[in-house]
Amino acid sequence: MDQFAEVLFSLNKHCFPLLTVWLKEVLQAAGFPSTRVTTEQKDTFTQQILRYHTHVLAHSPRQCCC
Image (tube, rainbow, N blue to C red; front, side, top):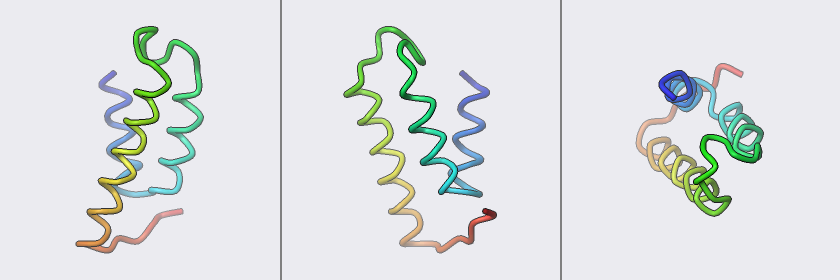
């Protein structure tokens, strides 16, 4: 999972549009990251990341590398 954390951090910091695409694609897979994680939990996780990014962006604008 450390590799995924690094990818999330990097995309969130440097190229947010790719983060949203990557999250949607990766989290659609059944059983990823665990068979114990529900679709609702995946959606909540994604929403929290997007909300955090929006909050940070409001306080410190960044430019995307994309």
